[in-house]
Image (cartoon, rainbow, N blue to C red; front, side, top):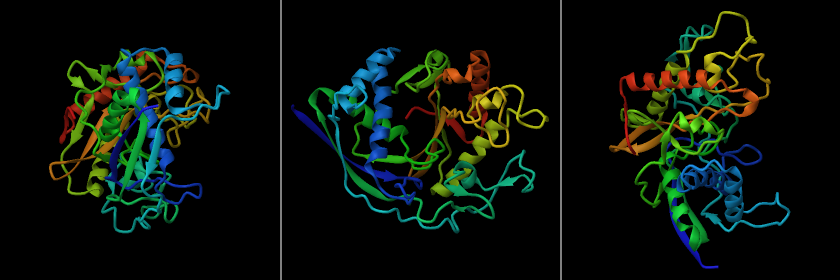
Length: 342
């Protein structure tokens, strides 16, 4: 089989909570492979005119990336080599978070929360000042490693598209949807056009397959520039607090008797479970944050990858559309945030 190769440098623009089995921060190739597959699905959907044939997608994915589920023992035809598997160099959060931000619902701390802990709850512990939940649990911003791929000739177009999407929108590790572990893939192919689809049409399936668009264009925004990730992550926390608290909960003691608007953004919500859903169900946020290098510094990229919640959530499409329209309008009206085309 004739093979092609691509070589890039992966550089983190924000700390990455990317760890090994002991939860120590470490460079490892499996998360890179997972990210490659996730954005390959978007590239596949785009190349196949937004087909909703999940069976065809799975067969194509298994043929390229391998599968043990079909009993054939077919190995991946994509080979990935990470230059180093070293421990991360970020050992402490001391001095990295300058001040708290206002949160209109958090009374126990006089309506103030640590912005880094707010976006990184779990890997980061916000009690008594933000700190790493476990020592040695993070890779430091600015760390980099070489990444080499080999794959069959016939898959070069989709792989190149996938690498471009990873560079533009990819992040790795814990809380990566909030911008942690944002990745620059230096040497990746140019992005060109975006994989855009009408965001309401994207609700015809329950897996992320496109960047949404509306009558104003791509559902992609960027923040004002910042000198470093510390201030930028604080700004992203303010933005997230802003759009989430537009959907207040009723004053009843939780668990709530019905699904509230904020539940459609992501679930679970701390202290606000609903009786309508299983306590162990998880609904990830389809609005994602990414740190990008721009204008000699950093900006935040905010983008919507819309899809319908899985069937166990009994999705109310009318409510979901109403909630996300309000979030889009909030971002369009937020000072320092503007629509952009990467």
